Image 1 (tube, rainbow, N blue to C red):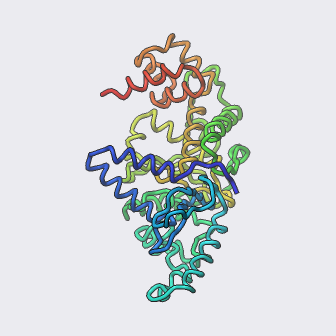
Image 2: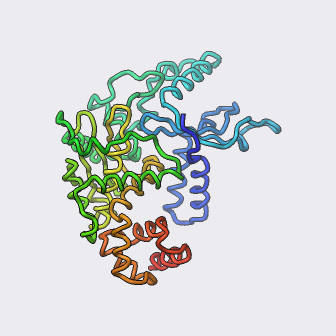
Image 3: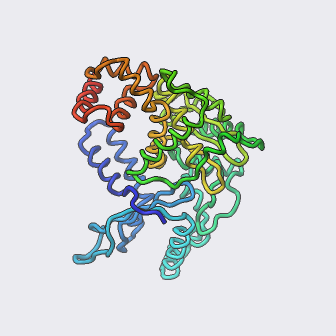
Length: 395
């Protein structure tokens, strides 16, 4: 069990408040999507007249993130309080599944009327729909990718295909699904990965908010120290050369979902591969493309499950803690302190937006990534960071 993780309920409510102040039609659609998502993940939304605690569940590969809040519970009579503090933990998904399965079995045994006739409550027939959504479940079933029985209503451990779709939007089109499954099939291999890559692989649990940046930075520096690059003679990091040395292949794909930046594939039965979606606006610049490569390398090195395998899609649906750590890794890999300081020295005083652009061009990184990295490494004061960020956001 891992504690001290970001509370999903708090993050969700903050996002919802921001959308309530937005009057654009797109914001209304986002609010509807968020409400539908909450109905699938918050325990109390399944209450039909009963009083459930405010507990939310979100799966992260073979772990389950459980967020809880003792605040006002829907339908609770005056004076009723649940005795726990606000928090969030990560536990093995099978432990959560057993507890919920026993809870459903208890509910079914005490149920009256139509509830008793619903067989999926007892035998877990809806497990695949709960995991990836009805639409994607149908696609996976047609390819016989989820034919094995579920225990306690879950698939555990995840198959590569389901793990990949678990971080995609539930509205993924059939065309996109077929494209991604074909790319995944193309990455299958019985060859062993390179020893240089294996030596850098670490299986780490999802980090806390505070630890994400530190972990990402540390591992990126390990990769740079192990590489054949001489940073003192460079003006920018050649990420393609690092991937080549580690035996990681890169494949460009065309997926309609522009929120999908990249996919990391590695481990038993796969050749280490990074898929880059050319339809994502982020990847249409050299700087964004390079950042995606570095970001996905972080997933290959850090986010393999117990079977030492990963098929992770980087989208807004992916676990935020994993994405934050991968972003930190990418920033440090592409902008190690030696090169960052050399760029600052070459540009001179960093005072204007044009100065920031010159630093970014030298490092071949995006302006936003450079500015964030400068602040994280205490290379600029906070007031200057906010001033440049405000200037950058102007039309």
